[in-house]
Amino acid sequence: MTGDKRKATIASISSPVDLEDQSRFAAEEDKRRRNTAASARFRVKKKQREQALEKTSKEMSDKVQFLEARVGQLEMENKWLKGLITEKNLKGIETSSKKSTAPTSTDNQDNTPKLNDDRITEERKDGVGTDAEAAIDATA
Image 1 (cartoon, rainbow, N blue to C red):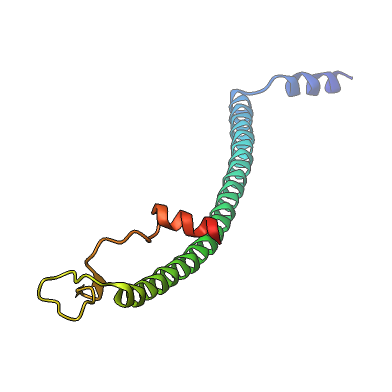
Image 2 (tube, rainbow, N blue to C red; image 1 turned 180 degrees about the vertical axis):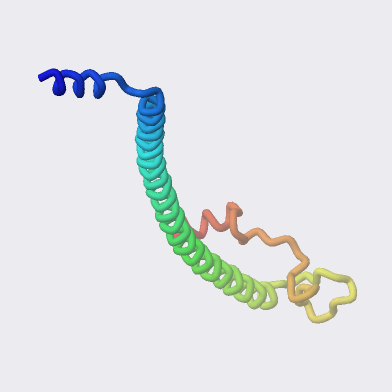
């Protein structure tokens, strides 16, 4: 019995080296746990950041696609409007050359409006945004 008691007493009394090892071990374990938690937080934040970037990327791609479609529409509208203007100008030149009785220039002898770079130099009253255009549209 005395041997058992003695062994228990010796085991309960730890040497300073054992306490130091235990302390170091506990510190390392604590450091490892904190590092693991920090790594987990970092991975979660990284994943959230990547998801936000993917969402922004998709939104930007959708916006680019929408704007490219809009550019196509506007280019088509622009061509159509240019065609209307060109057609109207050609009809205007034909009509004004047939209807014109007074020359627009003193040296013009054939009673047609004088053209500068294929443009009529007389003032026009039937263009886009004029009252004459509104009257024509109202009668149509």
